[in-house]
Amino acid sequence: MKTRITVIMGIYNCADTLVEALESLEIQTYQNFKVVLCDDGSKDDTLKVALQWAETHSNYIVINNECNIGLNATLNRCLKYADTEFVARMDGDDRSLPHRFEYEVKFLDENPDFAIVSGPMHYFDDNGVFRKGEGCGVVTKQDFIVGTPFCHAPCMVRREAYEKVGGYTVSSKLLRVEDYHLWFKMYAVGYKGYMLHKPIYEMRDDRNAVLRRTLKNRMNEAYVKHIGYKMIGLPWWTHIYCLVPIIKGFMPFWLYRYFHQQRMK
Picture 1 (cartoon, rainbow, N blue to C red):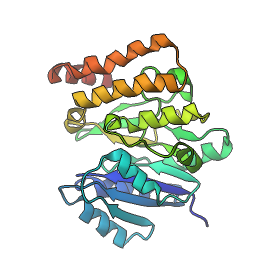
Picture 2: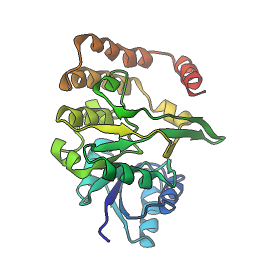
Picture 3: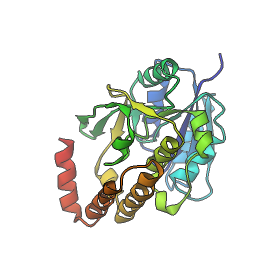
Picture 4: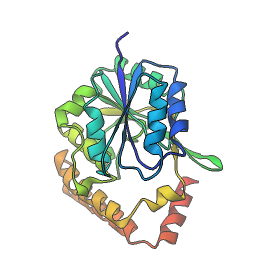
C-alpha cells in the first residue's frame, strides 16, 4: 500500500516528552504514514532519543541541523522528504489522539476542494487536561483577523498546497508565527481549509509554553497580521488588530499569565 501521509516534526530540547509523542502516533487508528524528525540543534538528548526510536521503527527518518535554525527552516528540511499525498504536523511535546489521522484523511478524501484540515485541541499540563477546544468548521478569510485560524500542530495539508507556496517562509520576523503566515499564503492563492469540530490533539500548555511568548514573538505576530491582511484582501480597518499582540507583549508577565489562565478556564 502506498504511503499517504508524511508527518513532519521539528524537535528541540524535548527528550523527556518525545517518546510519549511518538507513542501517540503508533496507536493511530490510521497507520499509513511515515515520520520525518529533524532535530534543531537540541542541547539535551533529543537527537539520541529520536535515533533510538528510528532503530526499531522503519517508517521513521531522523535528520539534524548542526545548529539551531528555527522551526520554519527546520520544517522545510522535513518537507524535502515528503513525497506523499498529505503532510501532517506534530510537535515533540504533544500527543495526537488515536482517531486524528483517520478523521483528517476521511475529510480530505470526501472534500477534494479543501487543502487544509485541522482540529481543536485538549490543553494539558502535569495535572492533566484542563481545557477542551472547539472547532468552527469552514475557515473564512474573516477568521484570520483575530489570529491564526488553524491549530498548526494537528494540521494535515495536501502536499501540493505546500509546494504551490514554497513551504514555510524563512525569516527571523516569522519565528513562532510561521504557521499564521503559511495560511495567509495558501489562502492568497485560493486554497481553503476546515477546522473539525471534535478535538484530535493534545497540546502541552505549561509554564514553559507561556514563557516562550516573548515580546519579539508578539512583534512578529503584529508584522504577520499587517502583511497578511493585505495578502488576502481584508479591509483597512482590520489593521487595528495588529496592535493587540504588541499590547500583550508589553504586559508584565504576571498580568499576562493571569489573563491567559482565565481564558483557559
